[in-house]
Image (cartoon, rainbow over all chains, first blue to last red; front, side, top):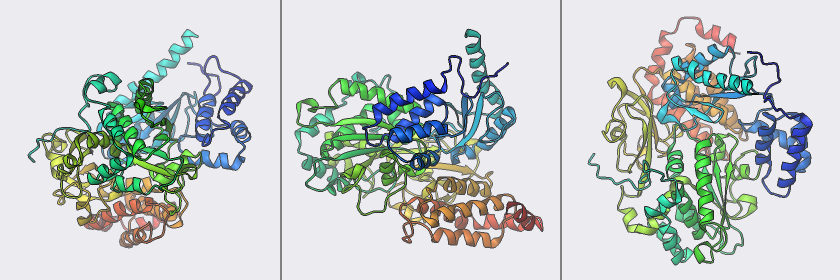
Length: 177
Length: 436
């Protein structure tokens, strides 16, 4: 599988100018609303796939806040990322319930399969690996979250098939393109 | 345990399409708010006070009393719904929102009417994707049916309701951290006073209530305070959800009165049905991590608001049990617990920021087989010098870090010492060189 596009790229990828224009629309809509910063950042991350400096500067200007305030909020919350991430973010829960039911082994297996460490992205920009705090799937531990799907009772020997689903989605998307 | 307990908050769990407005209404839903609108807000607050509904979010503060702290003269009141369920390993709010979203919405309406709130914000944690879509859909249905918006059900009461999705920070479950986060800032808890009731969201009078607390309201209004106080032991009235996780046969969320013991929840046939492979229980965190740990010999503890203190715990917390069995290395448990608080301390107060970080470092060394006896004393001493109880922090997060770490070290000290005795000589020095 040849993937030559930059991170977070989909087939009909917009240029940076187009993304910034869309961000401006969001900013116009939210400018007058109090407490808009976090929803705006969530939408900006949805547009860009991560939060590049150029977007943060635009948000700061648009909401009339200092860049440091915006950057401070971004670095405070774990969902925001200022570095490009893969198409799919794999989050392994290491909350206590998952931990005592083998979450660590799940994490080690994923590291091994993807050949990356926590916080890194695979060379083909398909997967980013993160560790997350408990997200309340403790009854079905150990759990992992890929994008917004929660996978329950993940065993090390099932990981390949779980990840494979996300690999093949890209293949399908590329074929249909 | 003689259990003739009828599910109340979870009565719609497992019912087909219970998240649909028509199904909820057909099963008696939205009658509570209709009855509440016949009462005055003051009568409603009195009824909730009589029911002694204590907050289900962790602290157990009486909800009716919280409401009555609002100043008499006020133009705007905000109601914040704490759905940031972040305490590991808690998932009772998730269950309530996924399986019966309209029950929560009805609770929000009743609390909003009682507090004369103009806007309700549901602060939901960002990781909750499924619950968000379910609740948003339910909210749209409720709006369409006239349950939110202007002049609700023909009364003079108007309230808007929005869902705000969090961006991932444990401390945002603390009520002033949540308020700061809603305002678009870092979720840094505020120094109190002023309390949110006086100056909360956007400096306006604000009430923050937990999801499960609000879900109790329709039932209290419909069936009365006397019905509510007939359930459970003195001071801990009403139905309660308990989550059980870890290596048990049937992990899950169960509803009972607070008469139930930890042992019943782990071994009861209606509950977790015992340990996988009949392993012995080494320990249990009975109220989410932050309340502290029980040993396998302390399972008689009753899961009410007051019993946990007798076992050296901080309180009932979120009533989410995580069990670990005899095969678990206690050093791993310490490592996992210390890591969590070191990651989630918000960094405002020195004792918490530095204390949690250093305790994690010490736990790392201990788990690498390079612990020292004095490390155990340092851990205990550190936990005694952080938090609101010694008056050293803005919020309760460091207290929540102190209790599990201190109770782990104190209750399992012999086991930690055994590991330290068995360590190979010179390991401490080698690991220290690498880690520092």
